Image (cartoon, rainbow, N blue to C red; front, side, top):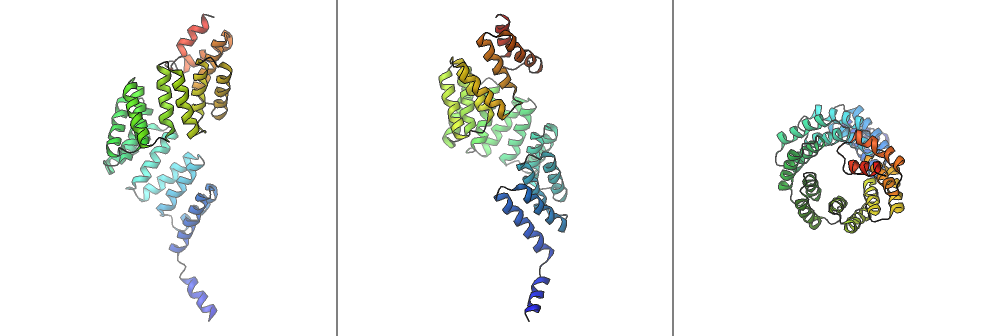
Length: 303
């Protein structure tokens, strides 16, 4: 009787049950911060059902956690082939395309989102991010403004709107938006960092330093916060302390040209023309519009 009961239970263990268990196990591994193991479970679910949209989508999210952008995009491609109306699939793929430098593909996904749901902030948020990357600042700003109108309590949207206003040299308007964002979420680090940049441009280096310190307290993992703080310290005459933070920033992100610029500024301030030009000359060729580069090349040449 025991054997019969066991067999009866086993016979009810359908493919649907098995694939569902693999999906749940994968989700548990995600919660345990083990995305590689999660991917294996999702792949087992897909072996049982090659049209299992949830497994493809969750697999993509796991790949994103370990920065496997191409694999994430491929998994989202599979999910969208099965379900071409999957809104979240287009949104996540668009973000992945952006991170992967595929801006025009991201734009296509943004356009698809708007066609699927023009009342979701995500549709216009993605569109704004894409147009910002393509340096279409007025269009990006319009997209962020639309996104904010759809979700006015979203601090991320407000900060992005303020960022575009800053790029458009509308710092006073940007500050107003940042004040709104702080009322919504005072623990948003990017609003404090952007505020610090505006203060710096205005020559208010003490307030710039105080603002970026707030950003670092909230999130101490962003290289560009330390780089900005290093620059502000240099302008306050604390050259060695500033250089230390710029170097810390470079250890966290070796591809940040602004940190290399700041090292060039340090050497100008130290009166070391040769070393300063080693940093600034190449930046002038590769990033001719970068703030402060032309100014400090002139200062270096005058040493």
